Length: 347
Image (cartoon, rainbow, N blue to C red; front, side, top):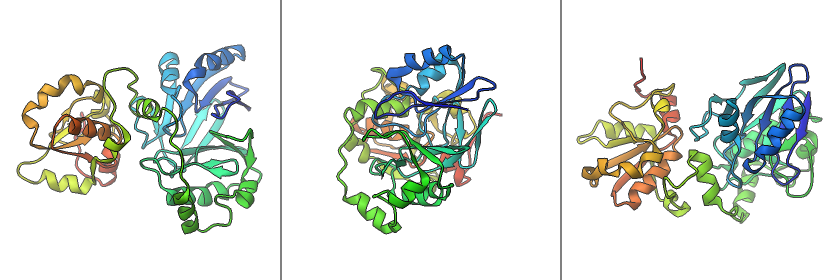
C-alpha cells in the first residue's frame, strides 16, 4: 500500500494507493493543489479511482468536485453530505474498495453531521473529528460535541492502540499520532466524561475561519459563481427548522404549504424520491425563477433538499426577498426517508 500526505501544510490531503493495481484514492483534496495531485498521479503511473471528502469543509475550497468532474472518478461522502456532486454516499460500516484495498467507513459525526473516518489496516484517517492532541470544533451548524465525544470514545478509541491516526488538519507541525497516545494524553478528551467534554467545548471561543462565507456554502452547494448571493450566517441561523413529522402534519392542513425542492433534477427523481406536490426549482436557478412565486408571498413555504443544508440557504434567500412564512425541512429528504414518510419516485 502507498500512503502519502501531499500538501505539507495545515490542511492535509492523503493519497492511498494499491501497489498491485495502481488504483488510488485522494482523501480531502484542496482545490488550490489539484494540478499537483494530477501531476503526482501521472508521475507514479497511478489511476485515480475515487475522491473522498471526510466532511464538508469550512476553511478551504474542496477540490473533490473538480477532480470528480475532470477525471470522471467517484466522489464519495457520507449520506448526510449536502453537496449534489457526490456520486456515492456511504454510512457506518460500508467498505470503499480501491484496487485490492478496502477502506472501512466509520461514521464519526460531531464536527459536522456528515463527518466520517476511514480505517484501513493499521491506520485511520479521522478528518476533523480527532486531531493530534486535540479535537475538531463542534460549534458550526449541525455540530454536536456530545455526538463527537461518542464518536471518538466509542469508535476511534476502540481501535487497536497502535493504529496510526492521520487527521485532516494539524496546526503544530505534527504529521501523525496513534490511537493509544490520544486515548491516554489528548488534553481535550482523555479521561473526561461526556458532560465534561461538552462543557469544555462550550467554554472555548473558537474564531471563525477566514472567508467562511466564500468557502462553506460553495462547498455545500457546488455553486461557485455569481448565480446567487449567499446569505450570511445570521440569516441562516434565523431560518425556522421543521422536523419531518411537523411538515407531514402541515401537509394535511388546508391550505397546505407550498413545497419548494431545491435539489438537482437527478436528485429529485433519485433514490430518496420527492414529496408529492413539491415544486422542483434547483437552488442555482432560484433567483432567476422568482417570478414563478410572485403569487406565493403570503403563503407558507417549506424548502427541501437532500440533508436540509441547501434548503436552509434557499429559505434564507426567500425570507430576504420578502416571503413572510418560509421554513426548512430539517434533515431534508434523508430524514424524511428515515421516518418512512411517503415519497414519489420515478418508476
